[in-house]
Length: 538
Image: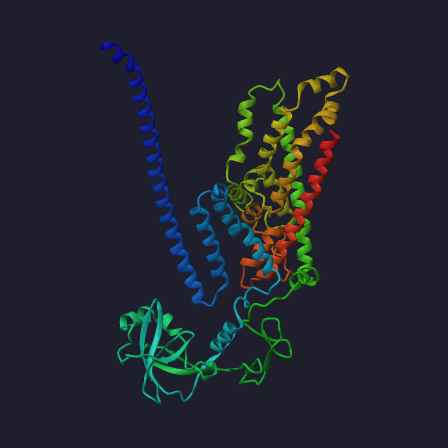
């Protein structure tokens, strides 16, 4: 009776093992499904938050009359939802965030800068024509001599201030604010209006500047005048000395009778060329590029800066490369002792932030208290940063100190990668040390280093930090109509034209930026072609 039982025991063990394997697989599948649902839930939550923010942004833009940007944002958001909610599409899930950041922070910036280059966007031309008309009428206001007194209450809503008054003809309570003409409000009383907060005397005093600058249009026609208050309790009628005629598209000075027409250049212009500012943004085509090359007050400084930019970039690359190569050869000599220690010292300037080093050097160049004048030249008063030529020499010298460690590291690596047997073959053939360097080491080194020299040239071509921190582009060119100095390079000149001073010309600055891009791209293309020729020769 025991034999059959013993014969079937191994089969029972096999069945149990198979069952355990099935259960283990089922548990793994259940765990994976649970993890999948968790990931799916996280996706839903994150996408829900993003979609909510996008919808809010779209509604805010649509409320301002902007429809193109909300449509683009909505389409992109819909595409992102499809990519992350649809099963599969694994490459797209990884590429989508990078592509979005690439478009927003690089492609859009480049395209928008290109667009601005063909407009008159800048100081006095940074808004629409309607805004310019309102601004002109507001800035030329005078109080009407026989203006009636309007008793008012000052209201506040969403951080903006409003005036509550009564219509002299109907007695209805009306509320108006900046760019919002007076209109009747249901439920308004002499003490306030629904949805608004009535300010007391203390709140009016705290916000007196903003309330005093408040101009409330009487009607939709800005020529009818504005209500303004000085004490927060009474308002008076102000009208502009300019009269806007939308049918004739003219602005007339009621005091002088001069008529200003829209000449298509983004401003109301009189027959003698006098313009009323602010104007508005318009498309001007290639005018900014034409100005850069034809306007004598811009062309002269522009070409001066262009030449200095090339000289600075070439000298920066040449001097740092020569010094870096010399030190790399010296410290690569096997007879040199303590090479590791000296190499660490050589790369110390490379370890400090460039803009901080430039500020330190600016202090050292100080004409009255700088280390160079006081210590090295015995108290001499040398205007290192005030004289144009000395300032340029100081820039090249400072950049040499900042840039040679990089070239030292690059050349050290390139020299150490040259096979020793090639150099030994030259020695066997009777070549001198100079001949080995000139005909063997340097050509092979140049093949490795040439692309880095090109990138270094492009970097120094746009080395904004050094110029701005060391000299600020000065000393100033007195005969230039734009804000530019003797040591400015193209990129620092663009920065000054766009962001420094009262007259900011974003269109001209963008045109300069496009010129810089074309120059750097052309030089890089020709240089890389030459690098390919060097590789073929070797």
